[in-house]
Length: 161
Image (cartoon, rainbow, N blue to C red; front, side):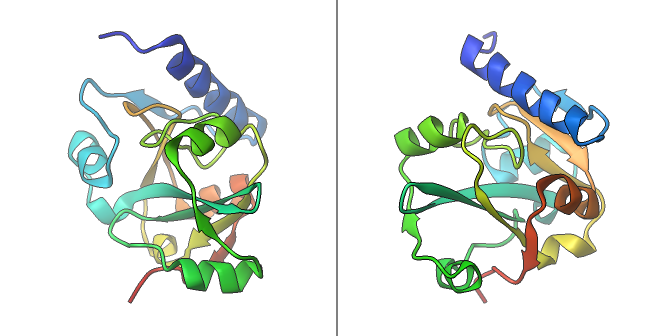
């Protein structure tokens, strides 16, 4: 099944954001879903930990994106404390409206509304890492250091322990 026009537009938005940040175009498309960290790791051939998943929260009407290792769960209280905001869960429609991405394809770059960004410190020990590229079948290869550079995200411990 070919990607929808929305998915193609989302992937191109990520491609443009990567180019604007001076990051090589490492976007790859897979025939199988990369919607979950486990699916993406299986498609790419890496560990689940090397998947940089973007988890979206709400801080009132502002999106908060926590980029975390695929092996971790985000501790929302830790993230809220670091940012000094109250976080709430974001439903799928809100995520699509404010980020421009469907859940399962939320990229760390190319958002419609500039988010507050945090980067899981656990990712910094991994190389390479892979992140969603705007659709549930597209990912891009990067390093944690480049991910921090292109997003401007604050590196912090956000994993539930």
